[in-house]
Image (cartoon, rainbow, N blue to C red; front, top):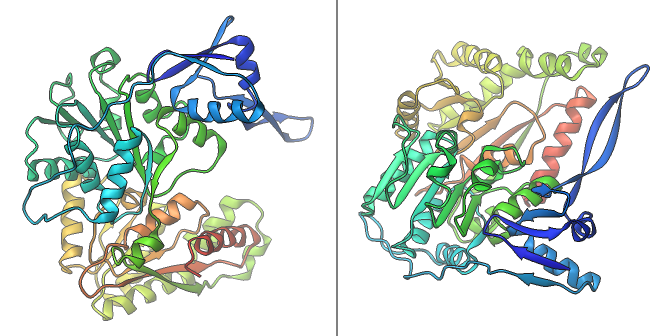
Length: 459
């Protein structure tokens, strides 16, 4: 088998060799076909090749190590033509700025792994100082053009301010009220939503290095991150996330456009090192009218048992009051705005206070004011949709209440992560979850979340 490395994006093989690699570079997908009475589920193997032509096929360069290993295991002779571009760090990680002394050993370990490999994913929980790891990597390449991509303006603002604080000079920012333009500076930071509006030819060969925040968003071939990375020749490609998606499609796409996991720290490891607070789980059996058992559609069950369940919403409000009375701060997560409004009404009845409700359409300035007020304990309870699941730094948060059920591992761990930051006098964060066992559709989700907590070693 002969493979030609075209660039940092793609490798090429003959059509015949592509067919040999197909079992390795494909994943199981499903489609629904309408039958005479109902739709039926069917599965098929979907290609992860980036191109399939009459004479040759292409796959993402990040998958080359996987292909090398597989062909060796299968006893298939392999010839690789072309050069894998690898840039050697030009300096040791170094930062100098107000309040900063030195990198912790665990941060240096992640920085060293990223610089040594040049491609891949760094998996580390919220609160270990991801921005400092970003800046440490950047400091190792003082002459390279570097792009930092994030999915929210709050993260863009935060990283931009840190770059300025540590004395980086040639910086420009897109996507936080700034006009979209052609990149001209050494360091560019942007939301992915804004950057994708830039014509490809203006950035294709401009950058030497790209750093992705919340890299779990790179999960499908048509995702925004995938579109940008598949049009960018930067040889250094690094993604950062607290949770790595485990389905086959996401693994093939993220590994192909970035690389495999090259550095990892778990929440438990960070807690042992006293970097993060340790999660303390508290489960509450939710109340629900038995009429729910007569429902069959999930939407109806969710509306009856979660959103419009007044007894359950009162339980949520009562738990929030317990923390409020102890002068502790609480973040309550909901999925739907209607649910948040109903919980806010119950809290107002009990405490007589209006609880701020952070939503996706809320201006960034208002979100920042609410966050700062929560940090200073001028307010002690905040409701939030998934807009605050990522990229929000609330150091003194004492408790997180998960009210919306669900079974997503990434969403569950992201919400827990909001309270993991350790401060003086705060060694644990209380995570409150509701056991909805009144209907089998909700019970299944409870079981999934309990499995997640068990896998993390929290039960």
